[in-house]
Length: 204
Image (cartoon, rainbow, N blue to C red; front, side, top):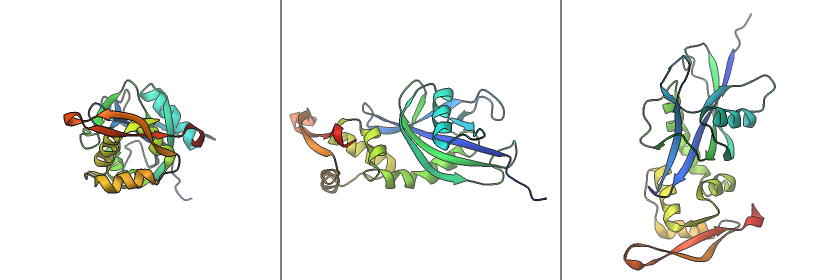
């Protein structure tokens, strides 16, 4: 008889944009059970029989870090044989965007996490970068309905690790469906007005 996977977990890279620090941050909470008791971890749950992945991801965030999400989706699957000390398991990595009472870290400042969650963050980073400014649900959840160009720079730089070219970024923003320059302005250094972008609510 062939062996079959006994566990399927759903682990969620939960993100927010922190405008005060101009960076994308990742939510963690210490685990309350073994294995890895008290070790910080991404919110995750074991998939229930008949449960959809999105429902499990939503349950993971609400039950483990205690807040709701604005949007979520699927990234990839991790199947390393020794990733879970409880036995062979698959983990479906999901993304979510939300905000609430959690331990938030800059993407490059996340401490050592339980399981293979640091590997998940590392390997999923390129997928998140590719989604930014392409997947409008993901992008709009991160930026919020109205955002200054400095937020676009901060989100791009902290996810990609590279400062974007401002001209290219502005052209990219101008090409997005449902995104327009707002009549609002923000004051930048030395009193210079900065561009504010606004999503069309009807195009959500």
